[in-house]
Structures are given as structure tokens and as C-alpha cells.
Length: 188
Image (tube, rainbow, N blue to C red; front, side, top):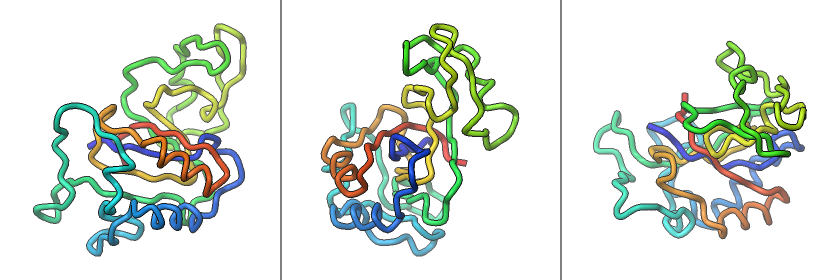
């Protein structure tokens, strides 16, 4: 199932300490208790989760506790405790990514990804509209992909089913000194 990823806008800036993000999320009561049966940094949703994530549609079917150990359910995974290199995640792109300078669609975006399962974030492509040289982290992926070193992943969320609220994004910015954004992708 897809996930919602929330991360600092500029993944190439100095790495935010993991503990800064963790403390912010704990203070907001975004995180619940740690999932004992899973690996580190997996959490149940906290008591303020539903005030900090907006859900679209009439009644999204979300399961916050598994019925069995193998059931997928909505929980939080924190990325970046030991991460120093960039991670890039994407799903099947339904809309072409764009140049952030001139908004021209980038038709050869696959060239940025190459053949590697983990693309080189510094590989470049040239915009056909304005000749800007863009790296993987500079392209406007239109919420369908992203690069990060530090991220909050909310599992079992379909694209456009949920959004982080301004309150959550503003609080993360205040705590870390960086702007945050989001995208949807399938985890590995």
C-alpha cells in the first residue's frame, strides 16, 4: 500500500538532527507508543494525529491497529536516525513532473532515475523549456516522488487521501528551521 511521506523541502541542506524531529512529534502527541513487533522507529498514531493530518473524502477506511501481525494498517515510520545519504522514493507517475523555473513538463524524467534501484540524486536533466539543469531533488514531482534524508512516513495512505495540516508543517518548520513538504509513494 502507498504511504504519505513528509520531509524537509531541501534534502541537500544540512541534516536536521533526528532527535529534533522526534521531540517535535512527541510534543505534538503525533506519535503513539512504539510498535514492539516491528523494527525501530515504527509507531502507532498518537492522540493528536487526526488533528494534524486532514483526510479527504466521505469516510476513508483506515485501520489503526492490525487484526493480525501480517495485516497492513496505518502507522508512522520515522526515517533518518542513521541516514546521511539521500533516499529517493517514487510510485508510478500519473502526471509528468515539471521544471520549477518555467513549469514545463519534463518528458525525459526517467533519465534522472537511470537503471539503479536507488537513483543518483545529483544526476541532471535539461529542461526543454528554459534549458535549466535540474537534479532529481530540484524537479517538481507534483507530490508523486521525493528525495529525503529525514522523513515521516504514514503507511497505508492512498495518494490524495490525506494531507498534513498547516499546523503540522508550521510546527515542524519552527522546530527544525526548515520548510517541510509531502509526497505519496509505495515503500520498498
